[in-house]
Structures are given as C-alpha cells and as structure tokens.
Length: 482
Image 1 (cartoon, rainbow, N blue to C red):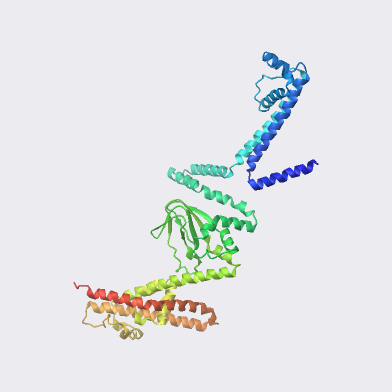
Image 2: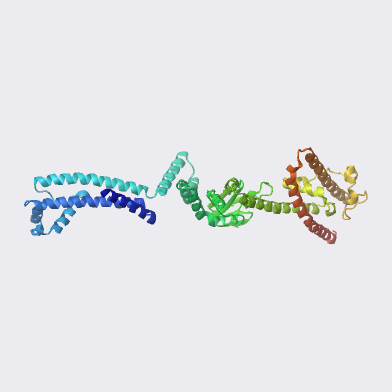
C-alpha cells in the first residue's frame, strides 16, 4: 500500500511543477532542509528518551548546573523534547556549546553515534547546497568564465589597454545575445510544432514590420520565424548585407544619411536576384547594435513547401523589380536627354530594349560614356551614323566650318547620339542572332515579358523626358550671354 502512495506523491509533485514552474534548485534546497530537520527530530527524540530513562542522566546534570531550574522537567515531555532538539541542532551544525553533555556510558555511546551520523548528513547537505548555488545561474557563470578567458588571452598577448576595454565592453553589451544563443539547444528539444509556436511568440511582432510578410499566415510564417537569427555589432562597424533582411532590435545605426532606430528594417529587397536592382547601401552602427536577420536562402527553404506563399513571394519580386527597373531606366533616359546624346523622337523599340538590357546588367557607363576621339567631326562618322544626322532636332546645328567652337560642340552631340543608336542597333542584332540560334524561343519568353513590361513603363515616361529637355533648352536660351 505504500508504493501507490509514493507514486501518487510523485504525480502530485510533477503536476505542481508543471503548473507553477517552481525552480528545481529551490526544491532541492527545500528537500535538504527537510532532511536536516528530520535528522534533528530523530536525534532529539533519542536524546530526550535517554534523559528520561535514567535517574542519573544528562537531565540531572543540567538541573544541577542551572541551580535547580529544571527540577520538575521530567514531568513535561515537551520541554524535554525542546532541550533535546537544541542539543541535536547544536550537534548537527558542529557548534558544540558544551552545556549539555553525556553523564553515563550509554549516553556516551549514543552521543558518539549521533555525532558521526550528523557529521555525515551535514557534510552531504553542505556539498549539495554549494552545488545547487553554483548551478542556479548558469548563464552568469558562463559569462564570468568567458570574461576570465578573455582577460587571460589579452594579458598573454600583450594587447593595449584601450583594446582590452573595447573587448570587455562588447562582451557586457552582448551578454543578452549570448544568453539567447545558449538557449537554442533547449528550444531544439521541443517538437517542431512547439518550436514554431515559441518562435511565433518571440518574433511575430518583428515579422509584422515587413510589409510582404504580413500577408503570410499559417505554417509558412512559423517556418520563417524559426529561421530568424540574431547578431550583434559594435559601434562604427559596418553591417554586411549578403542578401539579408535586417530588423533593428536595439541600438542606433545610419544608412544613406538616415538614422535608423528600434523597429526599422532594411534589406527587404533581398528577394531580388538582380544585384543592380537591390539597394545595398552600407549600414554603419553608431551604438551597439542588435539585429534580427533573415537570409534569402532561409526564406526560400521556409516557403518552398507552400505553392501559394511561393506565388506571393514571386509577385513581390516582380513588383519590386519593375519599380526599381523603371526608376533606373527613367534615370538613364533622363541623363541621355540632358546630355543631348539622344532625342525623345529617336527612342525606338530597339533603343528601349538596349537601354533596359544595359541598365539591368549594370552597364550604365556603356550608355553614358560612349567613346569619342579628340577632334572627331561630323564628316568622319560612318555612313550609318551620317544617316541619323537629318533626324536631329533644331537645337543641334549642322556642322559648318564658319561656326568655330559651336561646330565642335554640335559634332560631339551628333557623334554621341549616333554611337548610342548604333550600340542599340548592334545589341538588337546580337539578341536576334542569339534567339535564332537557340533551340527553342520559349526559354526567352520570360525575358521578353520583362522587357515588354519595362518598355510600357518607358513609354509613359517619354513625355516627361521631352518636357525636361525642353525646359533645359529654355533655360539655356534665356541665360544672358557673357
């Protein structure tokens, strides 16, 4: 009948631990306190019984030493137990005042046995309590051990004092991040479902700050939350990109002359495959910086089992790519118009495709810096370039030997315009030959669709380019001649 009681006590103890979450260290200390109390109780009972069993006992000697104060104590068992408990605690803790001592041979034997047993119990309790105290805060113990190792390393290598202070300060500031990393093995012991629930509880508020992750729900979002990582950077340190989404959790940093604070994000264009379209402006930490990171490869692995979510991410990629490409191509066309390298009336489909290809390939210099030979004039242009001369606008005058500096200036504009058009024509011819030589034109359907989308956007910006070019020429016309 005793075995079911023990099992019942264990079940009750486990339920209490699950419900209240008591510290096991505190429970262990409480257990050893109860063990010490039980040992003192049994020693008090034995010692009190010895005093009542003999006429000439430690009670008689205690009454004589105290001047007869305990003459009638034999009639009060509770007082005898209290004095015996006093002796047991004094013996167990090895205090030994000496005011209560054995008076006969039997008491000497019992007292010796009690001292031996109490010494063993007390030594065991002291050892266990010290072990529990050392393991109560393992993170703090690990931090102190790491700090000691760092100090020893810097001392043995003879590092300067300023660097030592910087290293110690970093460890103090990154203490919380180190604790979070040390807790990862604990989370990994849970089932996948529980790991996801815990990750969502910790990171859901941060994921909601990313505009294209808000629409993702269910297990896909849980997988993304499980792949989030934490990193820590020192002041004046540049944060590396490598196609990563960053969420600022603590600290201050600067990016493109803009101060970023807690909750700000950058690198959301990590989903784009084209490096030219991604904004990889450097980020520099002003203070100690704690960030939450999501790598592009981790995002792909998290959603690859969910076709609908993959479609959402694909739409985000297309939207960002078109927005960034339109801006870049419009900027290129604007620069060409300002440099009078091309006129809006000369923008053809071949030229649009050429500009789009060069911009998306990152070859902006091929458009803006066409090679010009010193002293080159209109008459030296190839026949194909000279055919383009009648198409120039009235703002560029034809070459004439009597116009002095204006002739050289106008000739350079015609040369640049002709070279850009020729480069576009050659690029179109190469693209046509490549598509003709390929086994199947379906492989290039995606490229054509992307170019067509950007082409439509450029058509909408053509009128704006005309206005900008006209405004520039108007400003030149009203500027007073020196």
